[in-house]
Image (cartoon, rainbow, N blue to C red; front, side, top):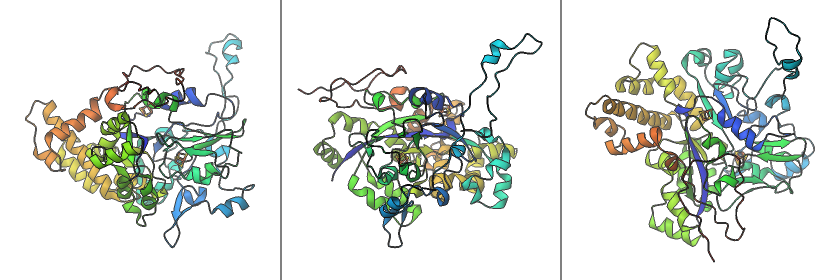
Length: 483
Ligand code: SF4
Ligand code: SF4
């Protein structure tokens, strides 16, 4: 068995307040310059909504990700290598700038040059604004805009009409640093690569030739062309910080403290098989089987034999990402049906269900009401399933049941009542497991949310620690130097 390490992230969507701090700090760090004004490596979109760029999930239109041939072989949805070469100079499956948005600025000069008057001067936009990276924020535009959401479109008419009363949540997105990245496979120049040491997917600017096949190839539309340099750019998972054991800028500055970063170990020889599973509903289990148990002695031995440093194995054992996926079985991948095996996973939000119960006049904190709602509320659960489980409602229901149980279990404790062990038992957990899960989700400190081992760059000299965002995190692992 070969073993590789992957830096991965989990986001707990119930805690996202849609403040966009992560997007803004990421922009300041990575895309605050010419040619990428329109690019948001981290964006936060309101769901239901069209997303950024508009309707990026409509793969019939954009042809991102992988699909299976009739004989069950994996192929890029955008076409074979031959087809790519034939269409190198004409690729109609690219979002236009208007699908992202036309960046604008304001007439700040007016603030200081406006003549004295009764009204405060304003800085008006210098051009008409018709769309933005988050035009439909918090359901702005209502059904008129959200009806173009590709997921909502696939749902029934009744759901489309009722969605506004039913639910809303925020979905922060970065590059998924996939195990089977279709952007890498799409590039005719071989300019995108996945680092072997931590799985971060990067662009080699020297090799990039502006073909933009990666933009089409990525189903999450997380590669951007810099119009000034003619080079592709994308989320780097803040690798200069990660190499120093620091969290990404988006995670560090997240107001909701909803991001978890950790190492997972995986078997690269199982990736193709997992991505080629025919039944889309089996893709999550297949993807989980690629990830290895870092406590298993045979995995530890194989990892060390594969050259993974000891402190990385220890980090994988302490990984909050592994815990949220396997120990607590809460995290799910975004659009597993794209078959890229994404490595940013999500805990689906319970809040739409709680809100729906409360809106009907029942107690939204009561376990029985919430359990019943999880079974009955097909609208939000169907929508969440379309995002996280290729449309299979069962895994979403399981996650939400666990979150409901935790809510009810902790309610008793917080009110000074005896904890009711039957509540965690109803979802296959013990009381102490549920309490640990609550601690990780609700009150974990930075050192538990980010377990990031230092890079081993013994041969590369001292890493550059000139990153502008300071960190209060105590680094869990000392840098190991070998002679
Ligand atoms: S999400 Fe990132 S790694 Fe995955 S295909 Fe898109 S750009 Fe590549
Ligand atoms: S900073 Fe955190 S809470 Fe705010 S929008 Fe980003 S992910 Fe959500």
